[in-house]
Structure formats: structure tokens, C-alpha cells
Amino acid sequence: MFKKWMLAFSLATPLISFGQTTNVDKIIAKIDNYYILKSEVEAIKARSEKEGQSISSCDALKSMAVQKLLVAKAEIDSVIVDNDVIKEQLDARMNQMITFYGNEKNIVDQFGKSIETLKNEFRTDLKEQLTAEKMQNTIYDKITVTPLEVKKFYESIPKDSLWEVGTQVQLSQIVRLAPITPELRHDLISKLQGIKKRIESGEDFGALAKEYSEDQGSAANGGNLGWVKRGSMVPEFEAAAMSLDTGKLSDIVESEYGFHLIQTLGKRGQEYRARHILLMPDYLILSTAEPKRYLDSLKKVIIADTLDWSKMVKAHSQDELTRDAGGIIHNPQANGTWYTVDVNMEPGLYFVVDRLKLNDISDAVNYRTPQGKTGMRLIKVVARKPAHKVNLKDDYEMLKTYALRIKQNERIEKWLSEALAEVYINIDKEYETCNLFK
Image 1 (tube, rainbow, N blue to C red):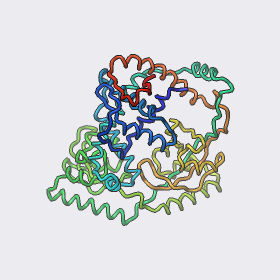
Image 2 (cartoon, one colour):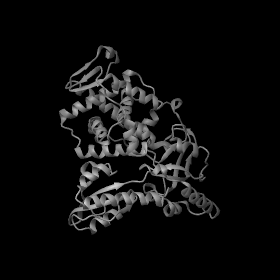
Image 3 (cartoon, helix red, strand yellow):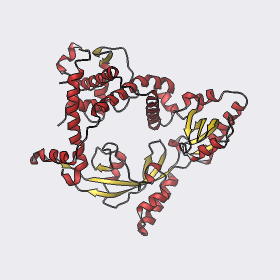
Image 4 (cartoon, helix red, strand yellow):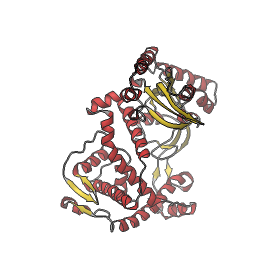
């Protein structure tokens, strides 16, 4: 239904391939001032195979060539990604690494490089990816589909070609996090108090923040968070920062992120500027025994007393992302709240949900939050659609997505034919038969 190169492009762009080292090797394509290395193409192939989607070398090259073409044309058209956006995305993706590896020390041990060195290596690739995405969004700007267009798209599908949609569910969760032990809390507070004494003795706050702070978004800037409006930070942090005189150091402040040493740098109206040093617990070593006991007991009470699930979520869940939305778990792959129950689901969900019926509640199961915290959760199936042939009533959003992609594909094909006349392209003979952009 859709061009292969569009599929390949989608595989190439969402995330940086952490751990991939770009060596000087064979240049197989030149798109304006941008080069594609053979090792990069092979890396895309390897990653797609790891994700269960086998693609050819030609498709992998096409995905990179489209990205480079988008970036080259963005340069011509002055489509620019702000440095602040790049920094924000880089920090977020570094935090993904921290979640995956457990802590910064494990990352440094794995790659043999400092966090700052790794960030510098990833920044160029990330800038290209974000620029390509912005250029693509510019091309797609204002493309929409109406309900009538969705209906026409559905009716254009031959009846014998309508595909089977698997069982779909909406899921809700109650999360309880592993508590920090008194010993770990004492160790972190003591370490921060030692850092505070060093600053009071004349050492530079910024230098110590760069060395010790585990807030990747500010550590490289000496812990400086810049000017922020009231209400932007967690309450504990903001209360301390607003109560301090300029230049003064706080006592140790505990928040959901860990433990902070704060210095207020300035105030103006409803804004303030502060810097901090953050120490975070190593969540991987925390015991989940207490949250498991809590949730086991809560499940029994909910079932025995037929308590309202949404009220229990509001009262007991410690997950701020889902607590105020009835505990509903977002499905990032579908960009919605419905999950198809099959092996493509996140394993931690699939092996739990596959056994549940509508309104069933799971036993307490292990959970890692997007921020890397350890805990347990109960999962309830709050809505369920049985397997069925795709239809307008049950699958309107899915069909709308497909119809939109067709219009986007038509738009970018037209854009490609125009862009190719403005950008220099040279492909190595080994890959000439790939017929890029066709």
C-alpha cells in the first residue's frame, strides 16, 4: 500500500543508534554536502532485523538517502531546528540510555567514554534527524483527511482484501513504586551535605554540578536551570528555590526525582533562576516487596468490595502520567490508547494481558517507569474489542491514519521530483541498481 522507501525512512529516523561507532569507511553516496557510509547502511539493516523487520541494503540506503535529501533541502529552504530543541531531545534520549543501563556509571563502563563525550558524538546525528523530521513536517503541513475521504478510502478496498484486526484492549494501571531505603536516603543526603560543605569552603558550585549532578539537562551547564516561571518545577524544589535569598544554598531537598542541593541565582516577578545538584537513587537495587504487598492487598479489597476502579487509581497510583487519566496506558506505537493483543506488544504487557478478560485485574507485576523508577503495577482490561474484519465503526482511527498516509505519500512524491532538480546526488556503482527515489 505504501512505498518501501517510506517504510525504510521511518525505521531510520526515530532514535539514535546508541553504541554505534562511525568509522572512516567506504562512502557509498553523496547527497549535496552530506555523505552516507556503508557501515551506516549495514547498521540500519542490523537494527531492523533485531526489531523483526528484515530490509534489503537498497531499502536501508534509500532510507538514509531520503533523510539526507530532506536535510539538504532544509538547508536550501532555511528550515532550521533551534539549538534548544536539539539540546532538549539529546537530554531526553540520554535519559533513555540511563533508564536502559540503570545509571550513568554503567553507561560509562559500557562505552568507555564520558557522558559528555557520548553526547557530543550523538549531537550531529540527532540534529540531522530532527532537521529531516521538521522538513518532512513542512512538506506535510496542512494535509488532513475528512470523514468522507476516510469513508471513500474504506470503500475503495476490495471486500476480499479487508484484513483481520486482532483482539484489541484498553488498559488501566495502578502503580506503586519501590521505596527508598533509610540507608540509601542517608547515604545520598550525606553525600550532598559533603558537597555543600565544599561549596561553602570556596569550591565552585558549577564545577561540582558538572562532576556530580545526575540531571543530564543541566549538569553540563553547571546545574543552571535558567529562568523558569512559577509552577514549572516540582513543588518541593520551587518552594525551596523561592524561599532562598540570592546566592544562598538550600538544605537538602527531596522530590520525586531524588535529592537536590539548590542555589537561587535571581528572582523577577513570577520567575526565578536557580541551579542545583541532583543525586538519584539507584532504582535497580530497590526492593519491590513493599509495593507488591500493597497491591496484592489492594486487589483483594477492590474485588471483595466491588470498589470503583477509577477512584482507586486516583487514590492509590503513584504514576503521575496516568493517575489523573483513570490509569489509562498510552500506546506510543498506535499513538492512542488501544493495544492489539499479539506478540508485537511490549512483552511486559503481552504475557499479562493475554490471560485477562474484560474487567479482569492482573496480579501485581514488575514495572519500570519511563523515568527508570522500579515498582509494581496492577493492570485492568477496561475495554475490549474482539478480533474482526476491519470496518468503519470499530477502526475509524486506523483507517484515517492509512488515508492520511496515502495523501502524505502523494505530496512527498511530488516534492521529491522537484527537490531532485536542486540537489547534487552521486551514488557508488555498487548501489546503482537500487534506483533511489523511484
